[in-house]
Structure formats: structure tokens, C-alpha cells
Image: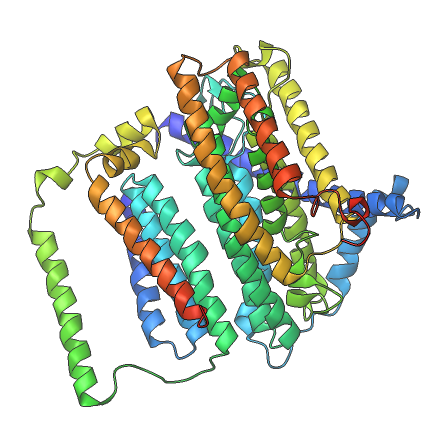
Amino acid sequence: MLEAVFWANAGIAIVSALACITRRSPVASALWLIMTLFATAVMFVLLDAHFIAVLQVMVYSGAIMVLFLFVIMLLNLGDQSATDMKGWFGRVVGLALGVFVMVELWVITKVVPVDQIRLPAGELNRMTVDEGAIAPVAQVLYTTYLLPFLLTAILLLAAIAGAVVLAKREV
Amino acid sequence: MTPELKGFVLLSLIKIVVVFSVMMVGVMMVIWMERRVSAWKQDRLGPNRVGPQGLLQSVADGIKNFAKEDVIPEQANKLLFVVAPALSFIPAMLTFAVIPVAAPLPVDFDFTVPILGQFVHSGPMPMMIADLPIGMLFIVAVGSLSVYGIVLAGWSSANKYSLLGGLRASAQMVSYEVALGFSFVGVLMLAGNVTLPEIVAHQQDSVWFVFALTLGFILFFVSNLAETNRLPFDLPETESELVTGFHTEYSSMKFAMFFMAEYTHIITGSALVATLFLGGWDIPFTSWDSGDPTVLKSLLTLAFFAMKTLFFIYVFIWIRWTLPRFRFDQLMQLGWKFMLPVLLAYILILGATVLVLDSIGWSSGLPYGAALFVMNAVLVYIVFFILDNNRLLLGRTHRKVGT
């Protein structure tokens, strides 16, 4: 049953990702990307990572993609064939990057990750039942990974300040 | 499938069908209620011809909408134009799946159907469709998706007013989602969990969060109004400047679907406020309802939940027919420059208070709630009377002449 859900979702994710990069209309591309993000969220649920799944939907599908659509609609981008991959050089670079990602994915399936980032099967589900869905994530985020977390926060703060400065030229 | 799983699936299907039907009838009743209440507020009669007191007016309107011609503009993006009403309707319905509407109902059955096999269920059944471990966050996530229906409707109509409505909707929803998310945090901090049954249980142990989190409650309700696109925040569909904005081009049943989505949003929004801040299905002044589940308990708690929800539905309508609409820059200022800083400071103060109360050993019960209420009363006074400086709350008439 779960396996069927996995395969169905994997199919949806890949087909939507392909549609996202092949559609001419920017709005259609954005909508297909939302589908991909949604299918990925379902994958997280299948891995018992409910909190990550809901964050995926909330942040990416719910906020960032809305802003994408907002900008696309504001600029009123029509059916254009604008692409970054111009000429033979662009195509070759694109192909090389694509092959690189495929190799990376293949390597990841072969390599066994270090013990620190692995949980035994069913462990996450047990933790969710015991402590709620958020505690397992919050626990490591605020203890083990506190420094990277704070650095990311400062980076984001700097980005926000930078965006405000850029948007408000006269300051 | 095991007999237990079959029993679970059967119960879930029944719950889905019941909730869906109740919501649909509820939407019709709320539409009728809004028209009657607005008429009452404006000293008119309102619909009172179809059925007793005009109760069947919405049915008549539904039939009318089915019979009307369905126009799709020539320039429109056909697929998105057709899908958009459903996209705004479905998230509104989905939210209700995680709201517990009553105390758990004891359901025991064990029967066998010739082809399908044996169905077994024993013990209390939670009175919600899905008891997800992420509970409340599911509501935020699904709520954040409801903007797509409006945005895509505005874009696919190929009409500049609709497009502007869609743009406004996206900016407004993203802004107020931030405020909505932060006003949730107080509830999270007190309840210690995100699942709605636990939030209800925690309110039964101490006090309703409307007392322990008064400021959070007010700000949550305001951002809830903005998320449902109701007045005074219905800028995506201002009829005076945008010709009803995102649904200008919609007619017949597609328009009716937007209409139904709005009222479904009102019902789910009210149910959510009732659950988070008014104790959900809790019956006040008694702990009888949190004991062993019985059928009577479920029915009574359901009645209390319905009353609380109905109260907030009335408040939604009341606000719509009382307050004028915001201007768009005022809306953005309220969201980003007022609500967000206030909420951030509130979370900080609340966290400190909870820490202090925790260190003296109070974590539930009446004194704990009373202490939080005092803290909130002070904060509400500071925010609405000192910081506000009579601008928002008391209005122009209370200001000195010439200022």
C-alpha cells in the first residue's frame, strides 16, 4: 500500500518536474513546480517526517511559490522562449550539469551515510508518538546544530537588510 | 486488510460524508444568516419568501446558478479558469479534517458483510476526520494554499481588474500568513503540542486560551479575517474599485463555488478560533466532559462546539456590516509594521512569563491561567491604549478637535 503511494508520487514528482522545465508559459512552469514540491512533501510524510513535510508545503508551496506567481503576474510575462541555455556552449554546460546531478544521485544511493545522521527504521515514528511531531526536529536544531542554525539566521537577516536597502534606493 | 483497518476506513468514510454534508448545509445556512443579519443591521427585511423565514433562499439561489449560462471569456486560459474555483474551495474544506468537533464517541462494532468481510472497531473514536501529529500546522499549510484559487482565477480571466485582484490577494495572504503563524506560537507555547485534541485538553486543565492569550487571540482573529478575505480586508474583491476583483469574469456555478468557498472559510475559521481559544468542545465550569466517553457527552460537547462556532460566525458577519474597508497601504502597514512587531514582542514576553511561572512550579490550573490573564490584560492595555494613541480603537470622534 505504502509502496504504491511512493511510486505514484515519484511518478507525479518526475513528470511535473519535466513539465516545469519544458513548458513555455512561466505561469504553467510555476504551477508544475508547485506540484513537484507537493509530491516531495508526500515523500517526507512517507518517511514519517511530518513536520518537514508540512514545512515544505507551508514555506515553499504556500509562500515562496505565491511570490513567484506574484512576480510573474506583475511583470505579465507572456509565452516567451527565454532561456539561459543559449547556443552550443549553454547546451553543453546544461548537459554536463545534468549528468553531474545524475551521478551524484547514483553515488548517494551507493554510499552508506555516517551514523550521526541516521535513525533506525521506525525510530522517528516512535519519537513522533512520544514527543509530538516538532520536538525531534527542535531538539537537535537547538542543541547539536545550534551554531549552524544561528549562522543561517544571521545570513537570512543580512539578506533581508540587503533586500530592503536595494529596494529603497534613497536610504 | 485486517478487520480493524477496515473498521477504521469505514468510520473515516462515514465521518467524511457527514462532515461534508453538514458543511454544505452549514454554508447555505450561513449565507442565509448573513443576508438576514445584514438586513437587520440596515433596517431591511432580507430574504423571507422562500421557505419559513426565507431559510430555503440559498437552495433557490443554487438552482438559479445551475440554470444560468456559464460564460468563459475568449482570451481566458480555459483550464486554469475552470480549475480555479475548485482550488479555492478544496483547501477551505480540507481544514476541517483536523478540527475535533466533540468529545470522543464510544464506538464498538463487529459485523461481517458477505463480500467485504469483517469490520471491527472498539474503544473511543475521535470526533475528527484525521488526528494528524502535526494538527494545527496542517491547517496553516492548507490555508496557505487557498490563495492559489484566487490568484489563478485573477490571472486566467485575462481581465485587468481580475489580475489586480489576484495580485492583491497574493500579497495580502503572504503578509498575513506571517502574522497568523506568529499568533499561533502563543498557543503552541502554552499547550506544548500542535495536535488540536491536546490543545483542547490543555485548555480543560487550565483556562481557555482566550484568557491566557488575550492579545494573541485578538491578533489571531484579525489575521484570520485577512486570510479569509472578509471585510475589512476584502481588498482582492473590492467592488468599488476592482469590479469584484478576481471573480469579475465568473458566472453561474463557478461563481457560486467562490461564494461557497468564502463561507466555508468562515465556518472553518470560526471553528478554528473556537478550538484554539475557546476550549473547543469543552463545557465550561465542569470537568464532567473530559471523563470516560459516552454518547450523551459527545452530543452535549458537540452542541457546545457548535454554539461557539456559531458565535464567531456571527462576529464575522457583524464585523463585515460594521467596519469600512482598509486601503491597501493601510492593510500592509497594519500587517508588517503593527502586527508583526507586536507579535514578536508578545512571544518574547510570553516566553519569559511562562519560564518564570514554570520555575515557581505553575504549569496548569487556575492560578496559572489567572497570572497569564493579568499579564495579557496589561499588554492589551499597553498595545491598544498607550501605543495605539487613540488612532485605531477609539477613532476620530474621541480625538481633540484640531489635532
